[in-house]
Length: 354
Image (cartoon, rainbow, N blue to C red; front, side, top):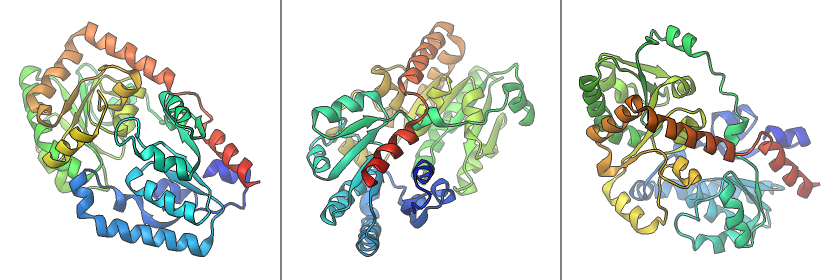
């Protein structure tokens, strides 16, 4: 949004988004937090709400007649929306590709019908879309643009009263309510096991002010566990090992160069459906980008306190395993492109609007 406004200060934006987009001037029809649902069963439970949102967006498009629409990720909703926008003769740009290379490849036919140009954030996606005849640009990953505002490790440890001579393990259990609910038990079990095996380990939990404090209550009663709200990047960067729920945070942690263990649990039926539909060897985004199992993935029944603790201890005590992972993470960082992705996208869109 900022880059497009830099091209033309008269541009205005409205639609679906979160706090950061609102700060850039987005007129929000619905906030992103209300649309944040994962899992097949969970989506079905909220289907009437999503239909309401869809109808509202389409209605506003009919009234306001925007010059262009930029769809971000969120394929279950946006692929349906894209076809409706096409029927209204609104040019559609897509940023952050649906993972059609992983599952439901038939969706590529739908995308070809309405996408004017797609901007992808992983290098392997560019070849995929070229092969399927969709105009595509590898813009680079937005992570390379981000200023993480990281303090020095010593300052971070001093601020939160950590001991620099003892290992620090970061816990990032997810940003959604259902993720927290399913990850609390295995993380508590892992903490207890790790404290028995190596009593000097310190733990820091990434808290979110947007989630109820009740989710963090079980952790607040434990020794050696500190909860820090809304400050994830310093703990990602300065932890010795991180336990991270599968999602964007795994890529952020990997990009910051911290060894990690990926976990994830969803509703059993959602998992079974996913197993039938998903055609990829890895789930964790760092592994998908690197092309091999570079970081441990403990998914569903494998996400137990015991298995988590085994992987964490290996990364804390086995210098060879740790060094191998760090080398893989360096490779990942290099593959994500260079700063300038926002300018690349805005220039392409503005060229069409002029």
